[in-house]
Image (cartoon, rainbow, N blue to C red; front, side):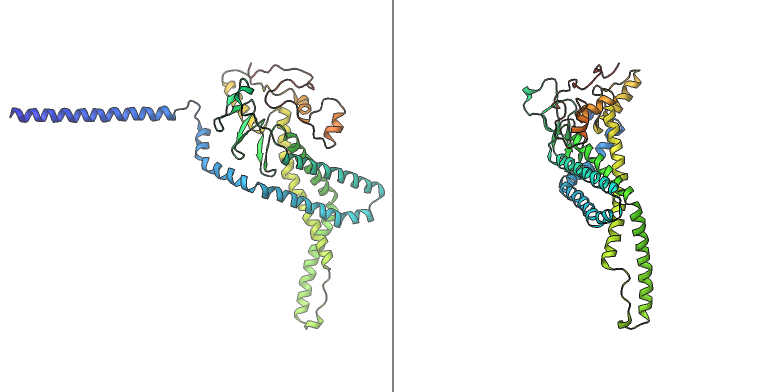
Length: 364
């Protein structure tokens, strides 16, 4: 009997000891899991970014492969508009407009076209700038978690190019290139001059568009009537078409030109205004989100955020465009210019064109 009770006690102790070990392992595993996943900066945005990570991966890879297609599409659509202007509109302008208006259209149109072609070519062929891989070349910089390399101020990692980009603004699929320190001016200038060109074509071609659209509607009506008459006649009695193929192509080309230019002017114009506001504030698209969060965080502490890379609205534009002296507004802004931006993108010293020095404080 005593032996039986002793066996029962030993079995109960072993069972309790086993349960205690399982409970300790459970608590230890739970603590390890929380220590690996804990992040004091976790919020709703971080959770959403984690959930959408597969979508981001798909978009990055699709954008990388379709960048060449987007560039070819830009070149093809722009070339079609230029061809329509030269083949259809220019002969009409030379026949009907006064000499003064002819000189204006020839001068402005060709200047705008040259600026568009130059800045687009420079934007897609100029490297945005990448930080050096050697760690001893830079001081006081962070390390990129993805490429494990020095990451200077205002530098961000592009998941599409899989490289860090100096003063990265965004990756543009229409350029098949990142917009960064060395080609940011080319990108904005292309958007600006393309918008100006589309507005110019829409305004100057409005009367032609209305006449062409009315002619197309008249074509449809006459074609319908011609088919109704032809249905009651023999093949040899069918009347010839009212409009020739050349007339049809001309009217449809004018409508295509106006609709495409108006659509691009609205969409690209909104994008240009957005980037103009960012340049005025002295920040990029990425820094706009970072600065907004930093401004909200400091506002809760009763502090005021100050962008250390902003020198005032006017000076921000001078730094962005590389205007050091007044004549640069003509030679570097209104004419094609391949001049380099201020600085190397590795450090951000005060540019010489800035008239008023501002204290580089993040918060006061």
